[in-house]
Amino acid sequence: MKTIIISLSLIIISLNGAYGQSPVITNWLINYNGAYGEVEGHSDTIESNVIKDQYDSNYVYITCNCIPGYNIGPWTGNPNWAKSQNFCFRITRNPAKNNGTPVKVGLGHIGVWKNGVSLYNAWDGHSYNNLNIWDQNAFHYEASSFDTCLGHPDQGGEYHHHVNPKCLYNDADSTRHSPIIGWAFDGFPIYGAYGYANPNGSGGIKRMASSYKLRTNMVNRDTLPDSNSALSPSDYGPPVSPSYPLGSYLQDYVYDSGSGDLDSHNGRFCVTPEYPGGIYAYFVTIDASLTPVYPYTLGLTYYGTVPTGNTGPGSGHNSILDSTKTYTGIRNIKSSVHFQVEPNPVTDRAYIYILPESDNNIYGELVNMQGQVLKTFANLQPTMSYSIDFTSCPAGVYFLNFHTAGSACTQKIVKVK
Image (cartoon, rainbow, N blue to C red):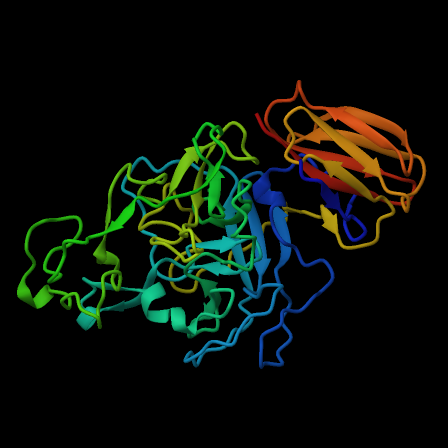
């Protein structure tokens, strides 16, 4: 059984009662200390990650510059440079399935990663002979300009990812369910590449497989994937060749329902660690060698309805109402509580060891996602071991909160079936 060492010397939870917030409020990398992003070869100082996280009963407002906390650049052959964007994205807290005509994901940002960086779709905005029939695949035509984190800036300096943002999470960890790494603009979460094998949360962990396939029998690019009728010769794409291999265009792929784990939007309704009752969730798709797999993030359309303000020219600059609250859950200041926990995820019982450097007389509590205190622990002492019985707890996410006279800290614990 693997032991997980929790270092909490730089993590503290403020005492303003934010534990019961939903993931769309809490699941952001927030810059609390004015840190700047590092753009290789450039001296601009731009505040990184999410600058502010505000919310009301209907929306979460994410203020960001589109610059991550890790180093980015250079971008070979790309004349553009990452610049501050001063975005305010608005994410609905009440996402809903779209029962009407699906909304196309479109060009520009279609979602936002949890570090405030933009998410783009698979299209690079260009098409064969500028006819908007055979759309160029950004991963095929632009990957040479991606940095090591698989991102690059557009002409306006908006740093973004068309594919798996590999520096944002551990995309090689196939032993556990991936974390939420972003949110689509219909309000549904985007997870990394790994999920439960079965939508009900059973079957272990597997890499999520796209249901889009290359049209391997195509030679002349004279039909589109959603129609077997022949195109006019003037609308043909370039014949498949070494110069234009299969996969060069989005229309080289066809959706094959049921051939993978995910639907045409590149998601599914399923149990996740943050949503034990189930949620519609998108997944990024990669292969066994961690190479991005089409459609990479979202499919051609959103699963849900899309509120106005985030998409289209000039979007991403929403107004914030005075009635919003600011999420202040995690601050980067020193705590005096240090401990180890194993196992995590837990099935029945977790074991806590308070490390010797911790303060005396620690008070603890186990809290669920609704903010309800399920168990309390008094006078916990350094060098001592304690256990928590999870057998009566349903599968889901819990928070173990520790308090001393001068500080408090928390650790997420996942209960699995």
